Every structure is written in structure tokens, then in C-alpha cells.
Amino acid sequence: MIRRIQAAPEDAPFLYQLYASTRSDEMTAWGWGKEQAEAFLAMQYTFQRRSYEQQFPQAEHSILYSNHERIGQVLIWRDSDQWILVDLSLLPECRGQGIGSELIRKLQSMAAKAGVPLRLSVQIDNPAVRLYVRLHFRVIEQGDVYHRMEWHPEQAVTAGREGVT
Image 1 (cartoon, one colour):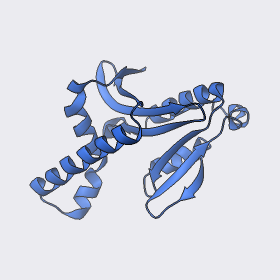
Image 2 (cartoon, rainbow, N blue to C red):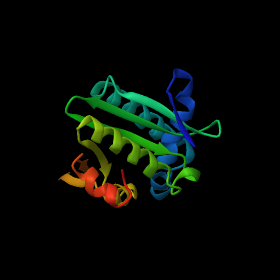
Image 3 (cartoon, rainbow, N blue to C red):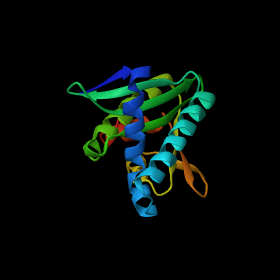
């Protein structure tokens, strides 16, 4: 069972470790040394945090727990006409186990009850794109680096027949 607990300042080291884990393949591919990669990741992590705080100041930021261990984070911004899944990140050893699918299905169900679409942005080459497509998100804007994707509550009726609620 996955629990969500509001993120706190003392979660910062874990959140940095989590962020770095999402970029490890990229760092390896670039062939940078440890110090160079670490400096780059620290700068990018700080930039991402500030960007989220500026763009989504009232976002709900939760740490994901399984068996009392931190395994990831989710950041959700809600307003009256849309919800945005700003970030969903899991540690590498927790990926591919259905955790992300479960969390997104719950968000879809809640968004359907609220009568609002659920939106997100994802890097085009991110393996999570396949997950979002499976969960009935559609690309609404295709950029050079990111897809903007959207799921509508009207899809809940169709998706529910396929086991996604």
C-alpha cells in the first residue's frame, strides 16, 4: 500500500536523490565525471524546484511511502477548471511495478468526480509516455522536447469498462 504524506523541508535530501535518479541514464550517456555531473544535477534540481514553486505555488507536494520507506514524490496542482500532474517520480527500484499506474488512476477518478481534465507534460523520450497513453491520456501539444497530454473525465466511462477508473 502506498501512502502520501505532505513533503517537509527535511525531505530535501531525499528529493534531490530522487531527482538525480531520474537523470542517471542521461548523466551516464554524457560521459561526465562524478563532480561535473553532481554540479549539473544540483543546479538543475534547484532550477526545477524554483520553477515549480513559481508556476504552481499552491501545489500539493507529497512524499510517497511504501512500508515506511520513501519511494517517490507526487506534485499536483488543482484549480476549478483543471488539475495538473506536475511531477510523479519514483526511485528506480520502484518503477515498473504498477505504483505510478495506481496513483494516476486514483487521480483520474478524483478528477472525474471534480469534473475537470487531468493534464501533464512529459519529455518525448520518457518511457512514462507509454504509461500515459495506456491510461488514456492524449497528446494535445507536441513540442521539440515535451508532450503536453490530457485526460478528460468523459473518458472515465470508457476507461472504466477497460478497468481504469
